[in-house]
Length: 368
Image (cartoon, rainbow, N blue to C red; front, side, top):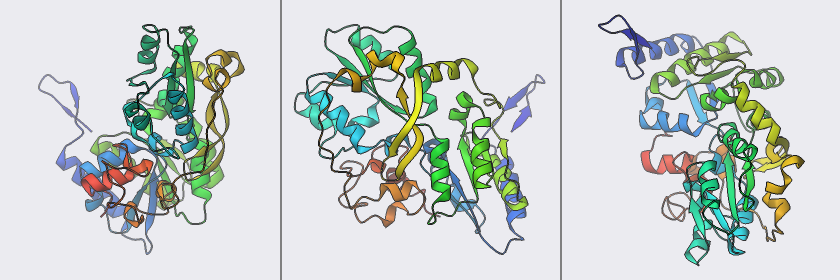
């Protein structure tokens, strides 16, 4: 993915049509002899954005299918976690969170509903932004923390830095490898290999996926996000599938190493511990939720406040869980494009730009 500039230096290039054609030819060569289809799953909303935006599914070999798995953090945040944030905002506290989370429906309300009724809900771009907000007010500021290892590490960092006394965290952070095991083991999901998210692996390294590869007897390839990154990751993954090599490979070496970012991991595991938790509509996944350790209990919103919610579960007709588990397509949902649209989302998968339903609705890119 590089070429030589006039001064002799190597320049990175990720949208070279000739290189893309060569990678597609490699994919075709690998799968052409097969008498059965190959089904792979990526676990990242950013991968889906790239695949849809550049129409990559339309140029893949006919017997190769790539499905989006539980890689959209907004989509897999459980409705009870939304309900907790809503309850805190209704109780008069300031809830700060990332922009997409404001519109995600809980059981009965979203944070935007509470905001419309006078509650204080603030959009921030980082945990540090929530801390800065707490420094400017006497009100209790609760950071509704969502996302995977990539965003959990910055949350840990601000908690290590002695934030103001009126700051706390409602953690809905998730740890990805355990849910990969759950999805791969489901009898209704066909997965021959995983394309894992490069930004999460920048923190964790590639070694965390060794257990998935071993337990599920499936290859895992860590990939980046430019079109050529995705195609290169698919070449490596499909080659491993066809050769029967259940290994972990790094197709994003410019950013990812086997060991990952040691300082970020130290902060992450100093502040958080893995507990069992719900992935919205998918399952209760063991050791997949990142909860604050007792040493940080004074910053834990669940410890600090009496959060009273009525939790009845997600809308019964919404099939977001099946979509994120690779068991259904957005167009299979009876709500899709009718009751559930980007401006009137019923399910979480229609809210975020990384959500499969929203991507399908806005680009049509999840269809071949």
